[in-house]
Length: 336
Image (cartoon, rainbow, N blue to C red; front, side, top):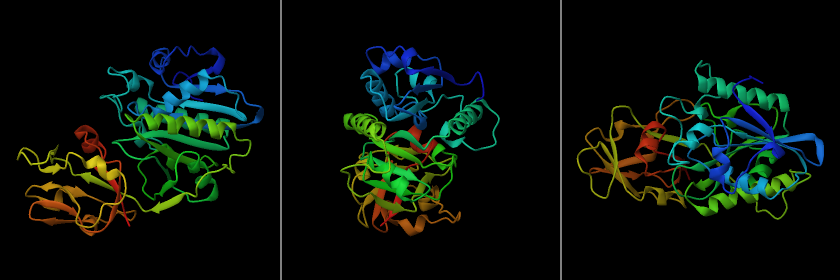
């Protein structure tokens, strides 16, 4: 492991405090937490706080540790972006202003401190050789839980099933932890919106069920997992301005409807109003498929100044936050 980057503690060495916030304040920086299981020949790993504003996994971890469970196997929890999470107000900063997004730096050739942290996390995973790896996140806006994987196998579906009944199979590569090959199933869980209480419960129940399972491949009593294929990132090109409002102010190039995150649930029918466009029209949007082809006109059309869906779409990760939408993406879509 790259020394000096990650702290490492056994569960018994931690000061949990009486709240997740107190627990967070007791951590110095990126941390690994080891928990001894009944079977110490095997290890499972769960990552949280890759983004500092996505706390459900961390909140669930604090609850699980406070209850004193002994897991079926050894566990190692990764707390990846503690400093960002600790920035006031707590759990509102995705990543520090002077840094890059950690979940765009895994497996990438950069040389800054965030890339070094990503390499340290990857090295720790390879040294521990887990039988499964989960990365717990929250969606950018309110919405239901779903999983994301670069592989569609029985193992990935089984892992997803501890948390959700929907998994997105992606071929996009953006430098996420979930894309890396560690020789074990590796799945991201989007637990729902950070401000939704049921998101914390989703994370907790999934962690507890997985940690209790002697054979994680056989999750009991869960519904089959539906797989949605080929998600696309919808991005606003550089230099264009964004706002959220019922009526465009004229100060922005793209005005998305203020309740855009309501579209994270269900299917948006063809012709659904998404927002209003300025003079550049669809040229301000960037939507590339796995082959790098621009496909925005396959998904959206313009009626007057209205941006509408051309085909039925499942929309994910839509957010009303301008900062996230402009630095990451407006949302993801799957044509259905």
